[in-house]
Image (cartoon, rainbow, N blue to C red; front, top):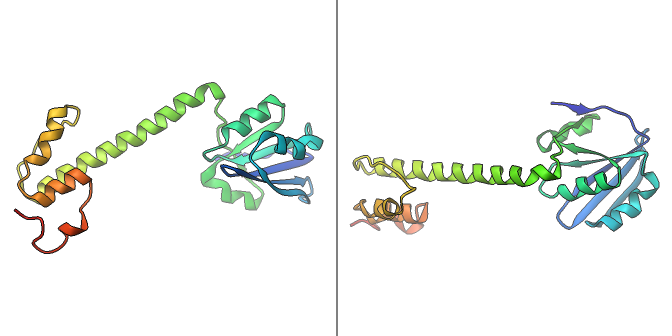
Amino acid sequence: MRFYNNSHPYYCGIDLHARLLYVCILDSQANVIVHKKIAANKNDLLLILEPYIGHVIVGIECMHCWYWVSDWCRELNIDFILGHALYMKAIHGGNFPIAYDYPSEMRAARDLLRRRMKIVRHGAMLKGHMVNTNSQYNLPATELNLKKHLRQTKTPSTIPRSDCSAQYRYGYVHPRFLRKGAGTS
């Protein structure tokens, strides 16, 4: 893990929320200069940072809504660092863990790949669930090819027990199937 270790006259840490910002500015001796809760908009942030521009570095945690702050700091030539979300506890020891500040032209591809990865993992989990459920009921193994629409609709109907079919349909076991003898054919 890399840590930021350059020195500046002022350090601004922003706790980013969807609609609010908690802004804290420290001097080089760690004295609190500003500690304020503001709305998450550029004008309010500029009012706070304006006296320090050119002498301040802005650091935020890499969470879901950091893009606009990064772009805004780049527009105004304000030094900006992005903190790695998993290692932010290190900041209490005086270290600031650095994450990669993706350029704005790369972010759409990054977000698309991250969402696709989640969808692929979810699909693999569902396939595994179907195979495990099939073996739980000692049914013959089936070749699961969920890309073909016909196979998607036929797979649950090959299972004779209605509670097992419900697991496929709903992706979980509904509480009514947990009662003894319920849902069996």
